[in-house]
Picture (cartoon, rainbow, N blue to C red):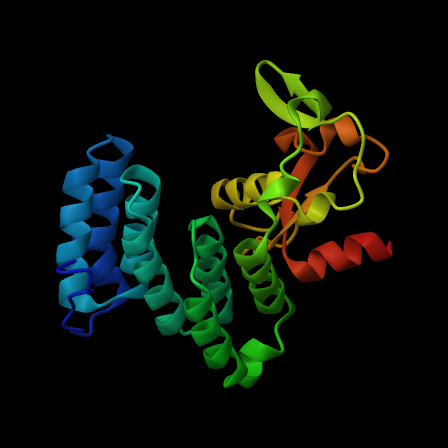
Length: 230
C-alpha cells in the first residue's frame, strides 16, 4: 500500500507459481506469528501478480493482526471484484462483514456491480450478505442488551436469559455472527463459502445458548434453507 492505494502490476502467472512463490511461504510466516514479514512478502506478490487470493490473505492480515480495516477493506473489495468464481466472491464479500464502519457509498458501489451481473444478482448467498452489510450500516446501537440479560460461561457471553423479538437485528447478534463467520468460513454441510450461522438448538427454545459457538454451525444459504424445510 502507498498513500492508501493498492499498488499492482498484474503480471499473469499460474496459481501454482503464485502459491509456491508467495502464498505458502507467507502462511508459514503467519503460523510462526511473523506477521510483518508475511505482509511484506504478500504485498510484493500482489504488486507483481495482482492476484485475488493474495488480496484475501492481505485483507485478513491487515484486519486481524494490524487492525488497519480501511486497508483490509480495499483488498477484500479487490478480491471480490477479481475472483472469477462466485464461491470465492462470496468468501470475499463475507469478509467485509468484519470491517467496522463500512461506508454506505462503498456498499452502493458493490450493489451496482452485483446488479449488473445476472449470476451475482440471482445468488441467494450474495443477496443475504448484502442485506447483512446494509443492516450493519444502519444498525441501532441502542440494541446492545444490558448485562443482566446476558448468560455467561467461563467469562464468555453464551446467551440471553430471554429471547427478544429483535435479536437477529441486534448489534449483539451481528457482532457474534461476524466473528463466527470469520473463524468458520465454509458451510458445515457442503463446504462451500458460508454466509449464515445456523443454531443447532433453537434460540427461541434455548435462549441461554443463542451466542454459544458450540451451538452454531456455519452454512450457506441453500443448505440452511434445506435444513429448515426438513
